[in-house]
Length: 460
Length: 121
Image (tube, rainbow over all chains, first blue to last red; front, side, top):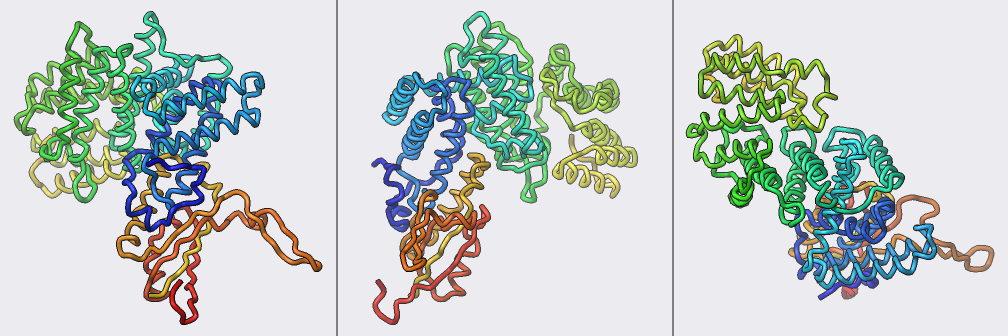
């Protein structure tokens, strides 16, 4: 059964509609938004991204207005394509392109696009994936500043609204909106094309895309402030983009599989990361039975593919560390020796503060607390703080850490484990001064109270 | 059982700033609410009214004058209605306490359908 938007106002009785209505698929609006924007951007060209986004927004709003009364149509995807098609053709008729001679040709392309989507042909011949690949390469174009690449990718390729992007990045809406407008203007003025670069330029361009994907993942995965639902969706979108890149023959590289496996291994822990009160649980405290089995299985599949070849990137090493945790049945059984070897490798590839800090944990596990403390003091986290927030927004810095509190927090755990509860308490107090988010603060307050009460040290 | 008409009013322009995730969540709350009403056999019907268009007719100076839209005076317009079965006004209010229209700052007017003691409908 199909649902004709033209007669949407002749909605069936809500009572009837609600009995035979399919449930709304998770993330339907995001995924449809991404699909519609990518398809229409190809038809209209990247210079008209703004127009395309407006058309798609209007189509989604129509669904939001009508579906509560009429019920979700049997094929919501087809419903949205039809509405978007009609709105796009209306926009052409109004002269939105300012190129009158192209109007009929574009309208015809819009119709062809819509027919292919509705009939399922676009899905079958990979056109949907191709459209989305082209768009993500445009959003992550090197002529666009890094922060703007992230914002535009979220907006155009991941179906995030301005408000949601602002919430995810703790920025205000006008800033994000302005950044997006400037970015689209740049695409227009610099005539940035909508294409997957050819073989010669592909590797560097692919790295730029992977950086954005990993940042989106980390924003969602890190215990930042902000709404949980938005954060979970960031993780899902990063994984979806990773899968898009891994599935396409042109972009399929071992490092894509490595990043994807890394995200799947880490993302699998999400159900175990908070307790019933919404408090953060560390790796040591998590119930591994709650880890997402299907994500782990997909992680292993891509992990296998990632080691197929000579390529060795930081993603490979990080992924190998995540794999060590994923294969360990308990925290106690963790192979810290193997993890330390990986961190040594990673420090050589990306000597970022957070990498050094994580390495110090492995050092403490393998060589004892004194060695761990010495490794912490050698970490450059303190210097990172002096550089200020700008330093951690650099694309090369995968840490993306505003968590400078992690240095004193970790030192506190080490001191506590060594039996120096007062010293640990001082470090937790320092960490509390630096921690920004409520879950982080609650974790630290819990530890501070326990250390002061003389309770046994928390495992790290 | 008495029937109540829920008249939903909202400002359709607020949605221009909503992201797809926001929209999905609002729609999910609508589905949950009407699903619950339908399951309890309370939902009689509901219709969306078009956001654009509309005519207001009124007699003025001895003749009927027709104007475009109800939207001239106010940003809020009637966006749709539901009819539900409830025991009383208090009961209807309770059923609507978590109505999704409030999630996008809309308002709800509840009016009992007056069957004047005759058979319903």
